[in-house]
Amino acid sequence: MINIIIFFVLFHLLLIGGLLWIEEPVFLLNFELAFFISGLIIFQSYRGYRKLVDRSIANEVAMNHEDPLKRVEDPYDLYDDEEDSGDEDFDLKAEKQKIKKESLKKMAKASPGHFSIGRLASYALLVIAFIGLKNNAVLDIAGFLTGITLGIVAATGLGMKLSR
Image 1 (cartoon, rainbow, N blue to C red):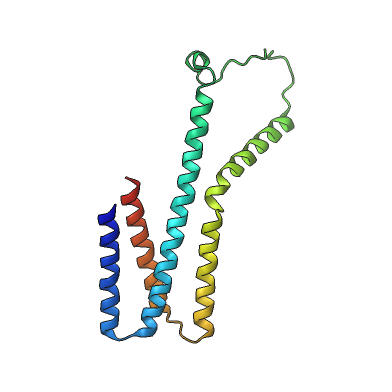
Image 2: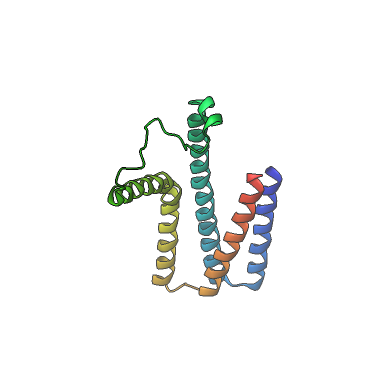
């Protein structure tokens, strides 16, 4: 892990050296802001989804330990404790409500991965940086987009290496 971070820092320093050699301070400022903020967004996304997966695994393990005999005998819950008689009327509206409630529960369980505070704060920081650069007349779109692109690529590569 330390080797990956050292490589990441050295790669970034090499990029900064190249940009300083070109002598474009506005491009460098835009590049640096976008690079770090987009990397922060990707990092926060990985962190949020990792928490979501860990929580799901913990819940699944807890649910699977309830009744191991039932899991072996009826793994797909085909036989309920309630007895169904096929003569009853099928209530379509009740079934739709049941499906809607379950989909809302699933969405609520997945929302921490989508709407984590760190991720939303990172996006807000990106918008503030863009507006700040624009208002101070130092926005260089090429530098900003290059920084975002390389930040995403670098953070994704780093996240993939760290998750192994």
